[in-house]
Length: 213
Image 1 (spheres, rainbow, N blue to C red):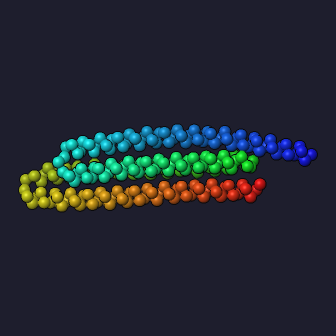
Image 2: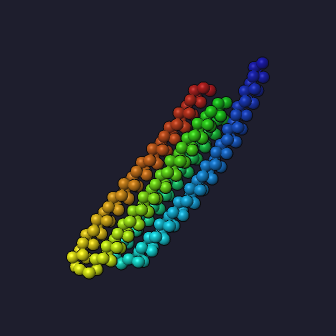
Image 3: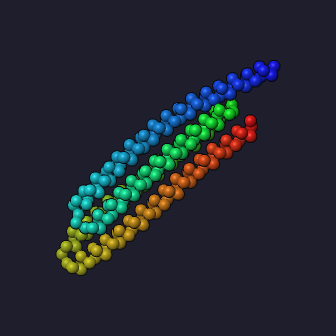
C-alpha cells in the first residue's frame, strides 16, 4: 500500500509539474507578445520624438532649443530602456518562480493563477508608465521648443526683446530639466516598488509551499 501510495504521489507531482510547465510556457509566450507590442509602440514614439527634435533644431538658431531637445531625447531613451529591462526581469523572475513553486506541490493551478494575475498587473503598470512618461516628455519638448522658437522670432526687433528671450529661454531650460528629473525619479521609484512587490509575493508563495511539503 505504501509503495502504491508513493507511486500515486509521484504521478500526481509529475502531472502537476507538467501542467505547471505548460502554463508557464503559455504565460511566457503571452508576456513576450505583449512586451513585443510595447517595444514596437515605444520605438515608434521615440522615433517620432527624435524626428520632431531634429526638425526643431534644424529650424532654430537658439541654443536653448538645442539644449532642451537633447536633454529630452536622452531622458526618453533612458527611461524607455530602464522600464523595458525591469519589465523583462520581473516577468522572467515571475515565470521561473511559478514553475519552481508548481513543481513542488499539487496546488500548482492556484499558485500559477495568482502569478498570472501578478504578471498581468506588472505588464499593465509598465505599459502605463512608459506611455505616460513618453507622452509627458513629448509634450514638454514640443511646447518648450515651439515657445522658444516663436519668442525668438518675435524678439528679433529690439535689444530689450533679445534680453527677454534669453532670460525666458534660461527659465525654460530650468523648468524642462526639473520636469525631466522628477519624471525619471518617479519612474525609477515605481519600477523598483513593482519589482520588490513581485519578488516578495513570489517568496511568500515559495515559503508557503515549502511549509506544506
